[in-house]
Length: 481
Image (tube, rainbow, N blue to C red; front, side):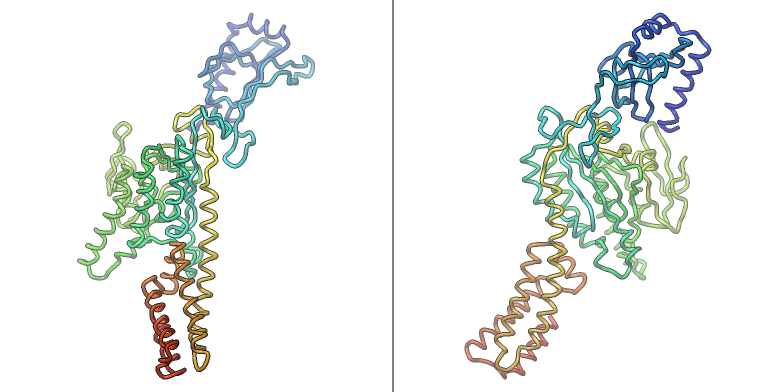
């Protein structure tokens, strides 16, 4: 039964009881009627209740709901403060029209994750960022392509800022749909993230930054969407929440890296690769069967429950069949993940995250994370585009290096390679993309650069070694590197 349905049932029962049984609070109701004022509760589920507050503590409100004022019918109910968005007290009403007029108003100040406007938050209070006596959130975006937008080099730049701000919680927002990018753009390699075994070390470095270097700060993985190898990365955090529409999984494509015809070799590669993937889940204390079922299609998955513990089985033998398809891998929607205790809860807003971690009040600190992430994402893409142009220029300049202008154009070609190497050193993402798309590496570019330097030095010493023709032959050899 949903939270909304439960509330509706409670309200309906309360109304029926009030109509059938004369209220024991009739005197109180009459006094309230004489006072010509009422209190109004605005609940987090959208309901607005009129009546009188009987008693109130920090945790709950006992409320006499007005069912029918003229008939003196009321229903007493108790509400948790966590379910009350705001309260209006001592509001006068027009006896003829029955319309309330605001007289005195006390609102809880709630803010969304995007601005400072009021928003339903299930009783959590978001304070201003300079309220130092309130627990603080530092928000770290993990969005875009795995390996390029999401890489260790980027997050190393945030350590100093996080330490300077010294937050009470780090909230990691995961927004990554690599599998969708592969399916929607199968021929556009530049839209793909990376899930082969070479990059698992890169992702492990990200985990080390947060789980080791920043281990003294409590951390929450909040998944907005995760379809691809990002789901494996996410399992390194034991505290995981998901937005209502979020997905978790989509890592079946990694199986291509151990899809080898030789059965013995295939088994060894699969065992090695899966061991690396499961290392992330071990860090976050997740069941390893989940990783198996998300990667290997022939595994089915079922679960049995022992109190609050889930016993997983890579078969159909459990009490609850999670995945019975032997030709497809499993992935989880947020409701399934919560029901199966993979996630710790569903959170739509920062207010909900605060509720789930047990905070009545919180604030979001002004860190540099958004700025650093956005600058890196736009910076490496701009730099990659420039590097591709430089590589084309290098080929042209090398082809023009003949006759009397050999030295001039070799010098231009040398600068092209130097600038590409500089970009690779500045952005790990550029190094990765150039390697995948053009087959370039720092090693072969450095080799080309050294050969160019030797040619230029020889020319300057007057050792032209065959003149322009030699320049062209040398150019062909360099281009082949």
